[in-house]
Amino acid sequence: MSKEPHVGLSLVNKAPQGMLITAVIAVLANYFLTLDIVTLGCAIAGGIVCASILLAYWLGKGGLFFILGVSVPLLLVLFTPLASIAALLNLLSGFFFGFFFGFCIALVMYKFLSAKWLPK
Image (cartoon, rainbow, N blue to C red; front, side):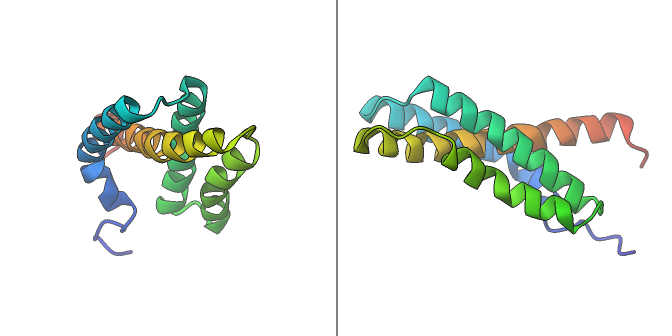
């Protein structure tokens, strides 16, 4: 097996920067349009779930985890109620910022936990 880090795992080192950039953009977006807190919370949770599943794939647990991981955003969008065009805009902005922020949170958690508990 190669000693080079997997492409997906190389994202772990960039996750703190991603969290910072996403948080700044989300604050600016919230200034111009109001983000729904429930949509944002679901998106963050979905990002954490997606990153956790994709981490399993990146760590060699099987291709099924890749399919499940990339299906999470689709499932979240499918089950979010859309009553108007404003709700659609809110969904897109909230999921873009929230999902990416949650994804970065999971990667940062993995980075700290793997450095602490996984053998070198």
